[in-house]
Amino acid sequence: MTDLLTLLFVFAASFVVGYFLISRVPPLLHTPLMSMTNAISAVTILGAVLIFSVELGFYQKLLGMTAVIMATFNVVGGFVITDRMLRLFKKKTPLP
Amino acid sequence: MNTWPSLLIDLLIICLFLGGISLFYRPKQARTGNLMAACAILAAFVAVLLRNPFEDPALIVIAVVLGGGTGWLVARAVNMIQIPAMVAFQHGAGGIAAFLISFVELVRASSIPTSVVGEVSGFLGLILGAATFSGSMVASGKLANLLNQKPVTLKGHSLWLLAIALAVVLVAVITGLSGDPAYPLVVLIGLSMVLGVVFSIRIGGADMPILISFLNATAGLAAAFCGIIIQNRLLVACGATVAASGSILTHVMCRAINRGLTKVFVGIQQQESKEPKHLFFEAPASEGAESEPVVGGSPTEDGFGRALGAARDAGRVIVIPGYGMALAQAQFKVVELAQALERMGKEVRFAIHPVAGRMPGHMNVLLAEADVDYEKLVEMDDINPEFKEVDLALVVGACDVVNPAAIDSEGTPLSGMPVLMAHEAKTVVVCNLDEKPGYSGVENPLYRMDKTICLFGDARETVSRLLEAL
Image: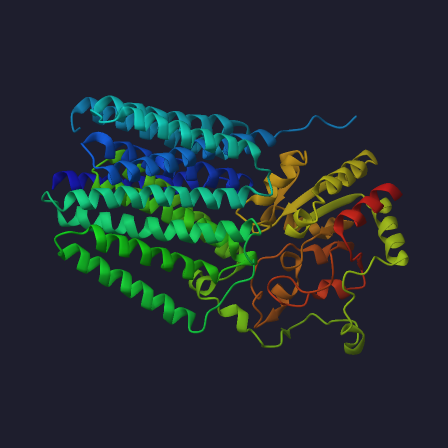
């Protein structure tokens, strides 16, 4: 039960801290921000590999693998595309 | 798992990714921030691999290589216009992972005693994950133009939605009480997916930024609930942060479009039939002349010459891009035009409305891709006071966001929505496809003002011609 309380506390604290941090991000960067938080939400990859920490039946293995594939797709794709976008934001040298 | 070292590692990881987010205040540092967040996830992944014994490590490696490889390839291949569709698709991928994990854990939990809260979280993770998945697929299809972009409204749509939601709750309760949950859970997943589809098909067009932000929040929540059932702090912390981010973006988008969340999702605005009631803005032209729309006509030579003259004479120019510019693939030409004007010694900036584009901040990315200095991309609130001193406002593919009816009329879907004050500039040149109203369906009185020069037709052609003539 104490574990559960800790988790609820972690949830509330992260929500509040996240809220304050993110509300200061300028609209200029909202698209990369969403793309990055989208990649972060793929931490479900931890849960997906944890499925494999006990012995599994065939279907569970299949489901677990699908979950891992989807989560890695999300995490890698998300960070790579965010990086590509952020590279576009640059300051130009003044025109001649 | 609850030893002090592991708690410390988790805390460090959380700090790393919060630090990454806090670097998103400035474009220059944001890349480092993104890298930090990626490292945080990588560290968390490695920590989990080291802490737990695994059956079938080979399967995990195969899955990681497959998923990571495809993710990398797809992320390299998409262009900036496709970003919203890609992000929506990834929300969906996160949703799949969340509901599959919840499913496996719930089936497993049925044989061992689990706390009620844990089980309820599992159900929430499953329902939210499945609904996020199907809703995101619809959103992604719409954004990628594979599905009709227009909102689809079923007969008694809200009632259907309510009925399905109730069915989901009912099945969830029955499943929770039954001994063998595997099959009822499959039904529950199916129902939740139907819920997601019915929910998102009704939203379309300019409301897409809200839908995509909302799905961002639900994907985060699903991850957090998943974290509660598997008792993993990192999942809970990251999920909650993402949920916060999605909520903020949803709120920002709703405010920018001046509608409450429920209004967007219930879709009231479609049945609008009330005539706009102008308070102090007089439409100058007579009624008869107005009712003949010039659809897709090429710009008249007279208008073109006047626009050219206005561009030559102007000292300060503000370009107002809308999603129409992206649709016409005109952003590169527009930027060339802006650079040509700058070489002529004029000051050129871009005014960015929060909902320009198909996801929050999308227009900034499109223009950054077309090589615009980000310091020239100015937010609405900062640039609005300056329109009075501007000689030329160049509107490219934008309608609702420059519609003065939002300020001075009552009872329209636009009323009260913050808009860019293009009508305060000395001259306005509009390069839109036609003079049809934008997504809101409200006529734009800006087109009928004396100082406005309308160049209807394909924006890319119009802008190219302007560029050559300069």
